[in-house]
Image 1 (cartoon, rainbow over the protein chains, first blue to last red):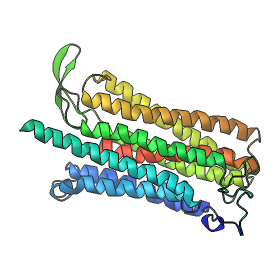
Image 2 (cartoon, one colour):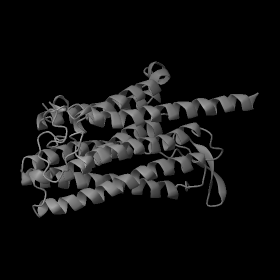
Image 3 (cartoon, each protein chain N blue to C red):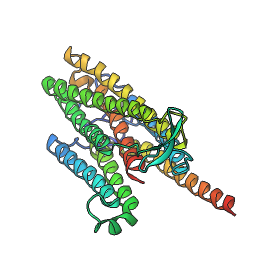
Length: 114
Length: 221
């Protein structure tokens, strides 16, 4: 039996692609609504609730979009795991690089302020 | 047991006429493209982290979300905020839908449905051209508002990050337009659908990079 037979399944159907597109569109609309609510554009009542968590909201929403595109449109859900590893490992390194640089520059800013 | 070097099956739903058999069973061009995408992740991570560490450190305007003092036509003036969120949101939605269009084009290519292939691939190219046009308009709009490449830290990091992304989109549009011409000539058969699948992977990557850039640059104040 082929060693990789279990890694590969049929790609999604146009119906599933459409559902993913609708979800992506809704998530983008939610991002913009969160931004507007965070700056008071949707009324003063929402601002104190959304503003403190707007960055976290945007990170979660964009991460959800990222995962949907990678899983369903880039077919990582169906294709061999090797391809997912080629993508995910550099992504993890990229996330660590971004986090490390932000922490490093914050540290230098605090040291410089003393 | 193992047919380690067997017919490649990296793409379900489409045959691999021009793919070489490999020990992994995955077409080598597909592995190469994923490796390129992996390295591009690190490239864009460096640009995004540079944007983030210099965020809010500009000494003069124009600034993205607030009024500021800036030099315009040789005079210190009050400049309004520079971002036009509705325009960029429209561009973002169009780019997201282009990913939907290209999976439908690939679906058509893998099943020999030439009408579906040409129609959706043409839509993808148009969507890509719209996004590039939006970015060119945005850049020249910023320039006329007094924000050049070296105006402040925000402008330098912003133009570098979004400019590199825009150049990737431009490369993608040229690549897909070339495939569109081949599709119209009937040269993208189900056996050669891998050519489109590889271009589609690149296009989706350009899309996911924008999924990160859009909230990071435009929506986080």
